[in-house]
Length: 92
Image (cartoon, rainbow, N blue to C red; front, side, top):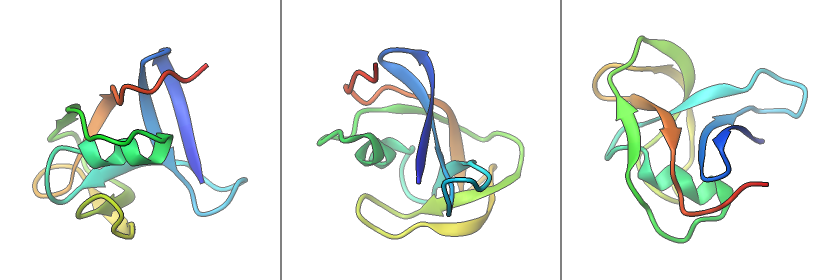
């Protein structure tokens, strides 16, 4: 399940959960800068994101677009996660 917190209609934070009533967690990236996570909100391209070496947390991470997510520690290197995404998709 994908959850989105809007910063503005075109900038947002994306979260994942394994169930609709579960805990929504940050998503991290093992290869790249999180740009492939825009796939989760329907974007067809991978624009840049704000991935940073933020504090370690438990969340979901993957290697690239269309690969499956794994659950575990993210933050720091090599599983960065971002403060926000701009995917070129407006969320009302």
